[in-house]
Image 1: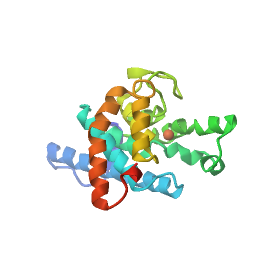
Image 2 (image 1 turned 90 degrees about the vertical axis):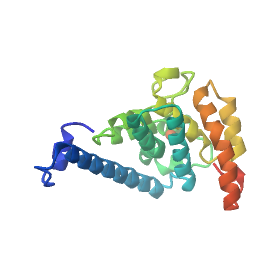
Image 3 (image 1 turned 30 degrees about the vertical axis):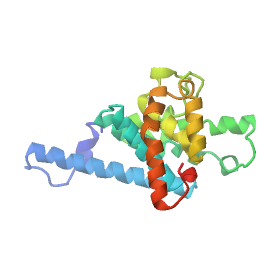
Length: 223
Ligand SMILES: [Fe+2]
């Protein structure tokens, strides 16, 4: 959160005279609440455009956070990861439905437009104070570990770690469990960061079986 923004946000909240430490805590709580509201509002926008796969998107985001924790990301990175995991496709709001919902394969021109969505997402989220870094992480969520992705063709650790995690969970979206695992393993080290894939598979496979067995649904539909 930028320094310039906090006093403006806090103006008129009657906190003058309150001890500094308490004031900081209260501002942090306000910022945190605002961040949650923004995530929630944009997430609803994704629902309106039918761009979320419901509970699976949320679960994937939770698993993304788990990967981040296990890989030792710091608190700020984890906050950006939460935003990026939930809102990485927000830029698809700027892609026409005729392309988003086209059942057939996209032609070259349509695919070029579809590939604009990370930039659209970045352009929107970077306007929000405190979301600048997450906006960059979203910009790079279609980079490939071997440098063959877009929009910048970054490779390996040039790609932000948050983006590398989002790429892995995003690849699972809408796929049956077995297919998702097969794709991750097949492209580990080429499209995906193998450390991220290894971490994800270390807990996701076991938990998917447990969660979906308890819910009485097919493990195959987990992702
Ligand atoms: Fe995407």
